[in-house]
Image 1 (cartoon, rainbow, N blue to C red):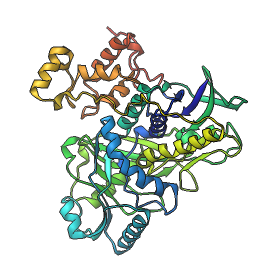
Image 2: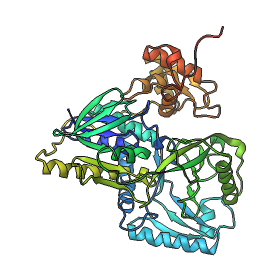
Image 3: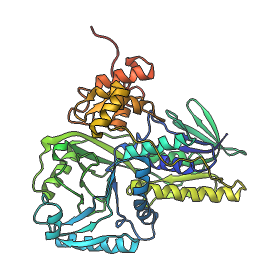
Length: 480
């Protein structure tokens, strides 16, 4: 019997799992995928928004500003890359200047600090490569960038180290309310829990409909991206937004925490929640926007394109609540933008709801004295001093063997992330945790070596190593 079952191990579910692991609770984290953060979290623009965009009084407004302020401490505790580089909402016309002013006023109402209206000359002093016809911008100094899947992976690792149990490949097929709580059924197992927290992303409405008459409908919205090589990562210094439209915040141009350049996302409502293909129209739209916004950009430097599906609802706000007619079942749904920014505050908010439920049912939460907020940092071999490198190679010679030459990742680093809590078991799982395959060749050279290392360390046949999801096989057998 579990005290709490969390469905969904993306950025929201892992933040909640980590926050609840501060208490003396038996917590189970379930996900339908073959790895953590394999939904919207892995196809995210990686922006920590300042909080000026959300409507006053909404959950988005309340939790975005609070969540933004929490990032420095959390990323320091978990050793996750995070940079406060600031953001700009650009205006190239008089009408766009009016929109920028509206956002500024809304930001002040929401309590966003360090928010400024600046003219075109000031924008050009910040961004040399922006189109010189720029008229002005909203400058939010608290805007930032983070590694979204790296953060989710770190949160899960820290939660597991603090007692949370993770089960992957557990797609929930049915939930029944019982006298003791809930019976959560997957294809292979049945789990009993007192409390269920629904963090199932684009499938949250389906999970909600398992316990009562479905109360909301998720609108899947696809966003496509272009990722550029590090050679052009310094084309911009801040997160550059165009003026928002009814479709969303619009296409963004930003550097990543690892030095690449990222463009996207588009915004397209879909019928299929799993449709993550990229399209000619979508990528062309990104290109046209970038060429209008920047003085120069070469799409010869694109190293990969991808898309993700966001969970939107008609109310355009987060849904975070206990279901009225199903006590103990909590929806944490419609966490689209600024969901990543708000995630740490969402987790605190959910803990408050769970605490109130437990108090009402005479099951007061007890703090866990052994809780450790810190996670051991990943080993970044190339960032070490010469003396540190020599000492590490002496201890483990595998740190002296470079596997990925694009990103300069060693065998020792890959072995380390395989054996961590919630560690990598797939080629893409290694890529998300340690970055081999993230460079210009996208794993063309290092991929086979990564597979060999995975097979060896996991004690399995190399043919059984998959790219990412179950069934995404790479090898079927020897040809010679």
